[in-house]
Amino acid sequence: MANPKNRWSKARTRSHKANWKAEAPAMIQCQCGEYRMPHRVCPNCGQYKKRTVVDTDK
Image (cartoon, rainbow, N blue to C red):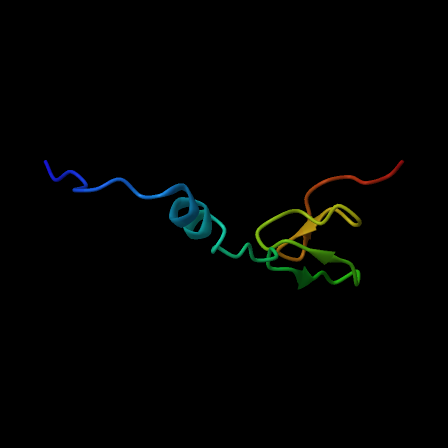
């Protein structure tokens, strides 16, 4: 197994961990006009793939 030859310093480790970027989740617009994540049921109208899947009557 390969092992690291020398230990990374704390500064190098922390700068390495701090150098990633989080991306916002992809959002698409539902037929009702609300934005939702893809491949999810719309929380506003309850539709998925142009079919009503969840009854949202309150």
